[in-house]
Image (tube, rainbow, N blue to C red):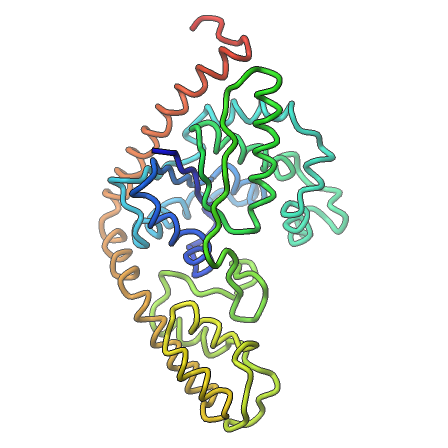
Length: 333
């Protein structure tokens, strides 16, 4: 089996963007690959260094979302990044192989830096070493466990490319040590927000969480952006510019009828939103129920995290023996 390495930062609960963007893929692939799913608490601190309680509180929230969405602990190892010191060690070694200029050119890093002006200033003059270098840490996350396949959203592709660059440089300097990982995109690698923004995001407050109840889903859906040219209920509209139809398509709900009625002016936006809210709530029902089980059994979540972290640590130890040997750092091994 090839090895999958993937994961998320514990900065909040998972939403539909995560589910359709990568999580759905992970659930399908876990039975055909040796799967490791990382809760990246160290990386979460790169822009939440002043709020460690938030990061800590979301570790279990993230684990419960994984389990509720279908990640099977009998086939996937869910583990906590900060409890794998080998990742931190490898991050230090990798930091010698990539320039600061290259890190600044990473488009995802630049975009995120612009979004966090309150932390780093208008020109990024207060950007931290940790934030700028987190693609290096991500490269270590993947390679410390010999990751070969990385299911991601398209916004993470620049990070995977940087990982491949670091691997090539390391292998060139120290000898063949790592394989270059490959990114795997889902059919819908980036999910739009309810407001029409190109990305569903916690920070933009435009998302539906996997754990949202029916009332919350309905309230959020009613705020979704529709065709701005449709003024009256019976005006014909263009479903292709409507976020309500966009989400109907995501869950494959009654598309032919909705599209036809929308274009003919036979469907009002309010009724369409109510139908979507009901369909979405039903779509997420199993996930909500499963999550409720784990909320009531926290000891099971802790055991899953302990077992997954132990498995990841054991694998990382073996990888680092090879790394230290190739780097001539195996003094007493």
